[in-house]
Length: 360
Ligand code: KG4
Ligand code: ZN
Image (cartoon, rainbow, N blue to C red; front, side):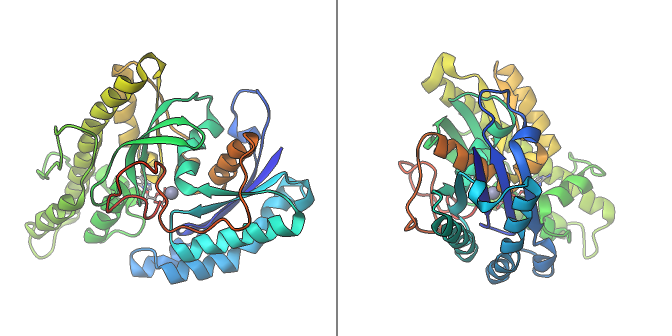
């Protein structure tokens, strides 16, 4: 079974073909038949963040070529595909419409089924492309638009345990990077600079620290970083910036680990002995310091820790193709009327929050 997946919800135009290899042990090298990605970083870099209109236009310019490239690298024709999947939200609506309309057109022209994938489900299930992780598992989804703990009960079955009440963790990395004069995206730049810095130099606030539940809040942290930078005088040195990057990263890690301890207890309370797996996904999961902290926490809690390979953490086509494949295997497909959605929470029962479900 071959499924084509298209991802256009933010600033990566991506396309991939994945295949179902039956009950064999999970191996992304075998399952991902081809994988093409055009990163729009250079287009958005002068503006210090993603510009929606530029993103939509770049998706239009590159997507057809990427689909052709993915098929030819896979040695397949459109007729060989079993289904066509695309991100239908949440995300920047112009970009989502480009990818979803392309997928609908291909589905209509070939008579193949369409699968309208929630981008967050793509992140949530990406781990199963690379490892044999059974349901239910506890997921920390940390990206540029999201920061939430989710109990993943099965395909299409998600229970949100906690989320950010303002900014997402990746957004905090990006905004802090901007303040420090680093490029976009901020996460990798801060991680690099933090290696040269002293994490103990600046005392930054830890919002919701030691409070019950597993919600997050990061917006106050950004203001604190700005004030700390100003306290270094009109021309902060390279060392000042490195120390601030390290202190910021440490603070975010401390907050995430504090919240994760509560999330584990909440998950345990509901799923008891069935719980064994702790999974992290999304762009911020590429952060080595975060992974180390989570590995230690999971070990202490008697859980297996799994994270997708780095290239499957940030947005990509394979995770959308894979989520499409998991749905298709269960007989779930969508009509050509499936809407593009700017907002689309994974857990429809969860209370709407300002920072949740906007972008992924
Ligand atoms: O899931 P993702 O690729 O896309 C969206 O959020 O749409 O996540 C991107 C986010 C950005 O905010 C970026 O700064 C962050 O992930 N990120 C990182 C790292 N690599 C990417 N944050 C911290 N450390 C990293 N190494
Ligand atoms: Zn994402």
